[in-house]
Length: 367
Length: 139
Image 1: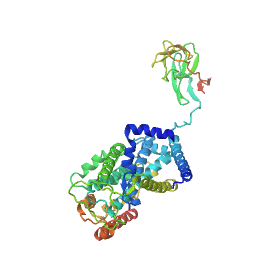
Image 2: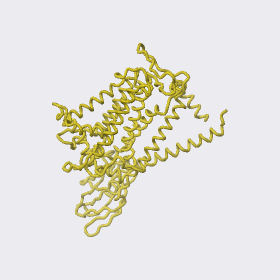
Image 3: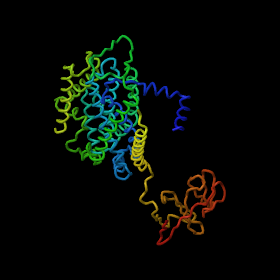
Image 4: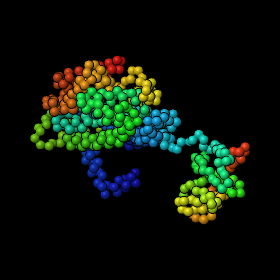
């Protein structure tokens, strides 16, 4: 203990770390009524880190070549010690990231935390959500299985319905008329460099916005759940008399991460192929389309929307409009009330939207 | 009032759980990164005799490393490790001079692997081999 204290003193005299700890951890106060939903961001940061680590480990054995990709993934699964564990953590982790991200967004929506002055927090988070979808889509192709190949064919093909430039865009995206080796090269570069770097930058921006605006007060357990932001000058939302981030809320973050890990590892060890189909275990064959090819669960609603409209462009336009509406939601919802039960219109639209999304996903799964 | 005994006990438990978690994560990652044991490691390599003419050398992979078979003008056959004992470069066979040269730092070895000049501290390792029915079996 004496040595640790001396080492801390030595560093503290040079860098003033105790001051940073007092200001950013023990002195960083959060609302007294803060709840477990506020730890979703920490879980996501943990998942992102785990995805980066397992992704780097997979890069050691993965070969991004159409002739070798499937074989290299099979090698990782069957021959490399614990290769199956690293790959399953990466594959299951990508699905979990989308799931927890949806919970994070829903908690922000229901607690009205997106409302001004937090429009930029919402926008950066929304772009992050799209990047997560993008990194999942590009990663899906990399094992070069029948599922990867044909799901990517279907997903990229929907872009062709955009008038005038649609066909050009599809070919540009694929690097050719059809999905093939050039597509693998492009998706690999996007998956391992462009998208992770963009995500890391946006996570930084997201945290910076959170730091500058301050943590929002949950609308539950307080008499006044209205947003009191004036909009005249910059004001940091502090919480005098609140609970310290460290150790109090850090313990909540650790608990949430532990619970997430229990759920995540239960899937990895007891149902690792939950997100896999039979086609995931067959090498890509560009001359043989398998029957009933379906996208990942989080794209099923988009897939079904494209199917129910007689014109694919209308289906795409509807989705584009829905996404634009969601992206600009803090600018459209100008009401000051934040408690969900005091926002009946929001509640009806949100619950209706969730049910519609679930319904379309289930329909897409069984169609 | 802080119960020091209880705090110490909880600290030890937390340390134990953290150490167990670190081992549970660290061991699979170590095994994943450790060099793979090739199936043919340590097994024999068979090379047809005509591939090593008089004065010629044949380099090949052996036990995860590089080895060389050399036949002197007089017909004597030798099997050696081709890894220079100085800094691990692969030696080259100089047919005219009938000696090995390590191009990295000019280490010279005789066909038997004995150091003639340069920085190598030890001779090249000799490998066991047998010749039968026109084939050379190393190992």
